[in-house]
Length: 362
Image (cartoon, rainbow, N blue to C red):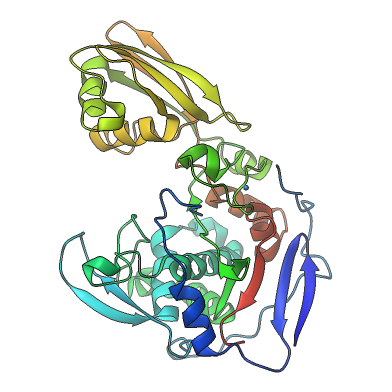
């Protein structure tokens, strides 16, 4: 039997008497496959929680143990490749230890934001755990489950201890132990990014995949209130031509004349781009962005939410935000928590319809 409560649009499942069996959970995880970059990696607009307070219906998390390693979720561990891709160093790490190190590698809390550290890491812990469960085994052909880079999630052993927020990270992982987001009985692909620019995007638009119901574009004023994040990048045509020619999908040939935006999604992110030159491919905004990033670096085309114009021998891009724009916006998360929302309310906004549940109970 299970008790169900709805918290600001997020269904929360709390085990009543029985514990989820390990066998059932492993069958659930084993049924999952796919790549975080294309399949519903980790959405019409979701109802937005009000900007004020946790509210009386927000569930409280269980108290954290006072010391020692986080209690592992029985039987759930991950085979991780450490270091750079292809390193060949594979270790087995229990899920909760993995989550504790991942959260500090994937989100930073400013020194002045001490009161926000605990809820930020609680939300990121749930997201990190969910994503690991959803894509566990994506590198099975290579002999491990997940890599330690941004291709999966950034992981370094014991990196949480070097954080100024080590105590808050540890407590957040303990308080959320075993909790993850599910849809249709499976962990969701809880993708996330740094800054949405004011509106997230649907996975179907960004990756041309079958759109997951929990990965639709949502308006996010909290992101812009927290940080506007405008950027400008002037890139020589020759640099762009070289970058585009490195990928078959964006190959333009010996000459690049310009780039024209053909279509945007509801949040203003570029969905289709026409590239004119020796060849004239029409490519997705995300394919174009990734091709440029690979050659020009991470501070070039920071998101697909951009305008472009030609100035002499350069193309000048002006935009807002950072990352692919799907799922959780980390800047918006901090803004929501600052406004008084709970971690659960924020997750409900970014993953509408997902169910917050537990592995083996808490």
